Amino acid sequence: MGKFIKAGRVVVVLSGRYAGKKAIVVKTFDDGSKARPFGHCLVAGVDRAPLKVTRRMSKKKIAKRTRVKPFVKYVNYNHIMPTRYQVPAEVAPASMCTDQQMDTADGRIEAKKFVKSLLQEKFSAPPPDKAGKPSKDVLYLRKKLRF
Image (cartoon, rainbow, N blue to C red; front, side, top):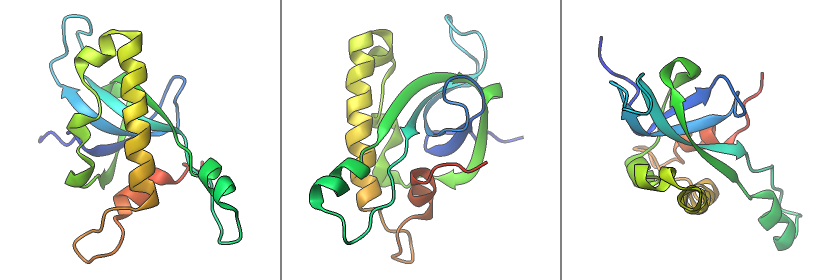
C-alpha cells in the first residue's frame, strides 16, 4: 500500500489536548527516530479557528475575529486521521517548522508565530485552485470541526 500521509496533507488529531483539531503534516518519520521509535509526524495545526466576519463589523472587530491560535506537535500515526484534503504548494508546509526549532521552547514559540502569520494570511486570501476559485483545502482547514 502506498504512503498517503505526506507533507501538506490535512489531518484531524484524534487524541490528547488537541483532539478534534485540524492540522497540516509538515514532516513525516515513517520509521521513527531515536527519541520516538514509532511512525510519527510533525504537524502544525489550528487550535482556535477564526470566527465568522460580516460586512457591518468594524476593522478592529474583524482583526480580533480573524486571529488564529496555532500549535506545533509531534503526533503518532495512530492518533491522526488523514482527510482527503491536501494544502496547495503555495502554503509550503515543509517551511512551517523544523526539527531544530522543536528541540527548544524558544524555537517552538518562534515556529508558532510563523505558522500563525502564514495561516492568517492564507485564511484571509485563500490561494486559488485550478478553476480560479478559492482552494477548498484551505477553506476546510479554516472551519472548526463540528462533531
